[in-house]
Amino acid sequence: MDQVSIISYNSEVVSSNTRIKLRQNLFSFLLEGQKSVQYAEKQIKIDPNQFLLLSAGNCLMSEKIANAGGSYRSILIFFDNKILADFFIRHPQALHSTSKKNNDHPFLVFEKDAFLVNFMESLGFMLALVQPLSAEMRKVKLEELLLYISEYYPEKIQQLRSFNYEIDEDLVIRQAVTANIYNAVTVEELAFLCHMSLSTFKRRFARIYATSPNKWLLEKRMQKAAQLLKQGECKASEIYFELGYENLSSFIQSFKQIHGITPKQYQLLN
Picture 1: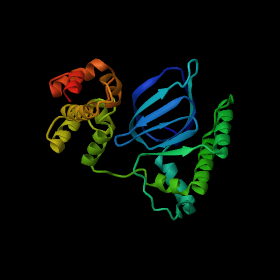
Picture 2: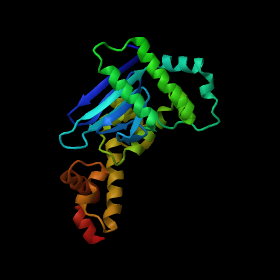
Picture 3: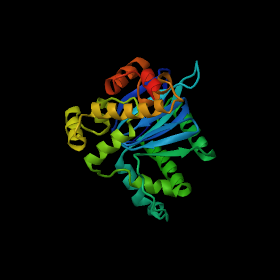
Picture 4: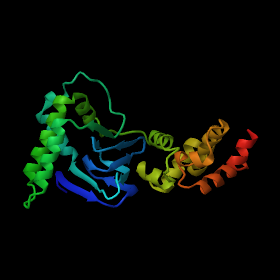
């Protein structure tokens, strides 16, 4: 695996919750479409006015095409931690920011400015050449980007340095399930985000919450559903998607399983 890779990625296929195992850190420059990335503890969505820096690890990735007849286009820069460590050794001034803010999430979001737009375009021109980019040129372009970020976004470079840290596994589970109570994420996908096998995830979840993850998520979602329905302003057909359900019938079935009656009957009684 190269220490730095730069590729152009285009697709006309919509993807949802694709399981991605990032072996390296990744700058993702979105050119067209929409992108969302779900880590254990946090989800982020970006449009073409933004770009992402993702840390190595497991995540769920979704890619959408913004307009009919359009496509999803991006430029990706993969790089390993050795390259990053070497950058900080050679440029210690990059860490002299007075900012003390820690990065609580395994990603950073940037708004594109004039320089970053031109930088992205320069990558596009280089990738369009017949001759592939040399290893040295790839390193130079990454260095250029990191130097610019350290100069104009010093708080970001500080957070970048703290990307790779050990975290308590119980905390990872708590963060993952809390962040995804109302997302259409399966228990298998939660286990993946926590870097655990399904059996390990279920066992540790049961130790923390004294119940199964399916039952816990079901009860939490139906508590929220009852709260929304009781307010009287929402119908079941208007809230099922925001509670993590792909269709209305499965939502009604789950609601009846917990509350013994349908959402409509619940509203009439309350």
